[in-house]
Image (cartoon, rainbow, N blue to C red):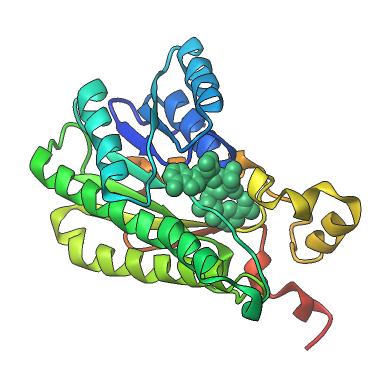
Amino acid sequence: MQKLQLEKARAIITGASSGIGQGIAKAFAEAGAAVIVNYRSDEEAADRIVGAIRENGGKAEAIQADVSTPEGCATLFDASDQHFGGLDILVSNAGIQRDAAFTELSIEDWRKVIDVNLTGQFLCAQEAVRRFRKQGHDPDRSPALGKIIFTSSVHQAIPWAGHANYATAKGGVKQLMESMAQELACEKIRVNAIAPGAIKTPINRDAWEDEDTRKALLQLIPYGRVGETEDVANAALWLASDASDYMVGTTLFVDGGMLLYPSFREGG
Ligand code: NAD
């Protein structure tokens, strides 16, 4: 089977020093893309990922930036211009959780999650569109002027008690993605999202590390396993490649069937 290619592509992956982001950065670099590996605080991890990519013959740069600020986002695009001469793909992946029962949820934790998970995705996407327009379309590179992939979650659709801030942000990402796709498709900017289910990363260590909680989690996944970062990276690679050129405004769920309301298999 022919592997998906991102030859000549230049990509920014936010929150790429761990979890899903690092998986996407490695997969993109392996497919031929030059990648900006964004990190917020873990410089050592970002350098390790960049080192592994370079050892493999790929191109990567580790860039520190807080995506919840306009200045932070601009830093990433300036770095892509400086190191790679422009940008073709943004994967807006950075995200956090600050969980609490509804009446215990502080305004700080509400704001922090909305700032990173929703406003951060908005800011980076807005900057990407401005840069794509300025750069202009080169059909030899891709039929698209640019591609934006948001990282949503099954919780854009499934309500999540104790995580109202997170579910609200991801529901917002869905509307942001679809509104942008509707507005920008005529300029050949492809906007889509990936919505992971339960993937083994630091963000949800509590849910998969302990035997009992892992068993409970598996009850929610018809396919019978917790997802790996590669599962999401493979989907992101396809969405970023020209093999998905007709995909516009779609959320790709990568969830082992979590969205299928598995408890209705016996109940209901
Ligand atoms: P993770 O904690 O490993 O990765 C999140 C990354 O975002 C970290 O590297 C973190 O440093 C970075 N980050 C946080 N705030 C930032 C900021 N202000 N600026 C820049 N970077 C920042 O967890 P993950 O599971 O890899 O999460 C990646 C994305 O996938 C998130 O958007 C998350 O909501 C989403 N997601 C994950 C799962 C899952 O099961 N793991 C499920 C659905 C959605």
